[in-house]
Image (spheres, rainbow, N blue to C red):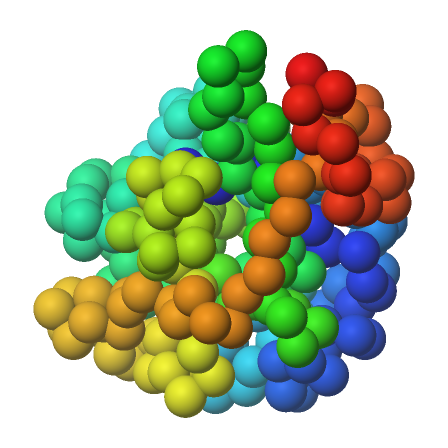
Length: 229
């Protein structure tokens, strides 16, 4: 799964990186430890224009009775996303890109688990494949939410975990975001395995284990990981 990631820049940075035509959100606080239910940036297409907006992480389908389902829907499995009721409709017509400077995975060790930070070596943000939905709560408030699709890891991430977020290369962004492209098999083929050669990783402090810790040290390389457990 993907349970934590990083958005440590402002709205204009991600708008430039994703060739956004319209920014529909004030800059969110930078986060070195994005956690489920946080507000996050996402890129979606609306009326033919690519837009950057704010979405609550944890998808709530339109038919949900309350918000509780969001905690179970921070991730959608690539293998079942086209058929699972919570995600099926969004997969057909409400896809998005979730910018991430990097994400965390935990490697099992003899004495516990150690977090590792994974990122692009060229410094560009990752484009995580996502879905979004719009839900109205009983009081009438409209809430926009999102989820991150996960799938088979590449050889770098496989050393840490058996899944990773689906990362989309720039050449498929237009088709992924196109709401008129509703053929599930064709859309699913866009969810390839991102090349390991473009990624780097390093162990980090267990500070990231607590959502209360949201500081640059969360992504700093750990020199002696064994001593931190």
